[in-house]
Length: 109
Image 1: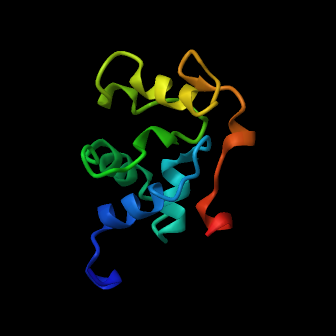
Image 2: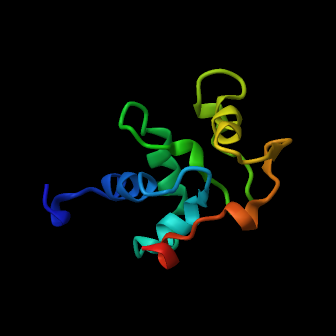
């Protein structure tokens, strides 16, 4: 596919695949990087539909570090378990060291 033929969701998935192990980003940070700063909710929809596309959707959280997408993962705490397996500390659905593990695609890419 050429970059012009990629859908918004495809572009979201491409960015999400670049989030480093043990780091997280937000829906809004991805939207801003893609030039669609007001489309954080669309990024969320993309993450919800990313199953089977080899996308680390567990690394995308809301702007406050809350695991708002956790109900889209199988099991009761899979999103949290995946993050914790990468060394990200989560308490009560909140990433504890959010500013330390936050990855901003606008700065990194």
